[in-house]
Image (cartoon, rainbow, N blue to C red; front, top):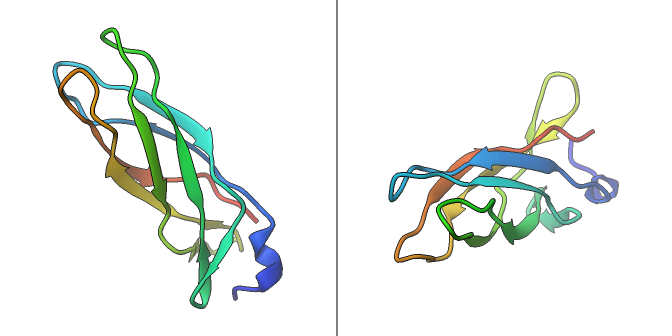
Length: 100
């Protein structure tokens, strides 16, 4: 069950973007602390992708609400599109690392 004290945590994440213009990028980072959202919570995130094909992409977003797992930990979904660079963008989606 969600408790307000659950907000004092972060999640790590690591994703590979979609292929575009014959390359991908890696996204590695950590979310903000939790933010109350209805009966659950979300996190914000932002960063810069890995360097590939002579450029990087910036990204930012908001996770989905917490999805609690059987062991008491929880994860959040991430989904979005990077900022434009070199005339293209990349899609990304995935689930971050669990937090207790």
